[in-house]
Image 1 (cartoon, rainbow, N blue to C red):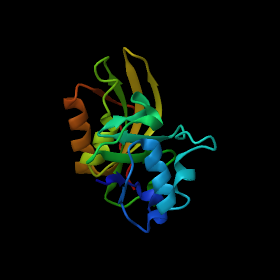
Image 2: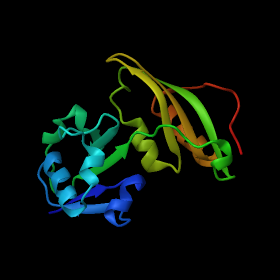
Image 3: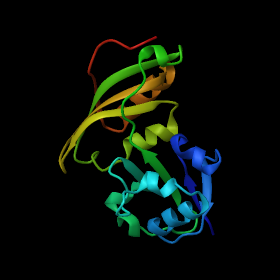
Length: 180
């Protein structure tokens, strides 16, 4: 059975616009090779010249980061849910954003239980927001991230409320909201 791989928007020009592609593979490494065979140029955007996943690219198999599994040897079973998520850096100036969007800058503080949870991954899947991780420091006992969330006001508010319900402390970096 083919594995379905979710492709981020920034790489969809290499998949003919497809947001999900199917490949036959039993490991993440095989999946990347199959993606390259079917969509030339894709692997070089995901992997470095040694064949390892680039530092700022995240691959999740069934909502688990492969870095916490067997990396390229992470097994893929029939029906596995694979997502490729590039880290988001930089950002648009307020005048470049849609007029209905806002940006909230917050610190997310994680307890030992929360540092292993893929919170940002879930936010991307559940809400119409774009998280921009500006900085992070994580140990086994605690984690803190500075993140900008951009999107429609209602979606940003829902995303931050959902994060709080996951046991993550959310503190504003600035009291203001960046609006166009």
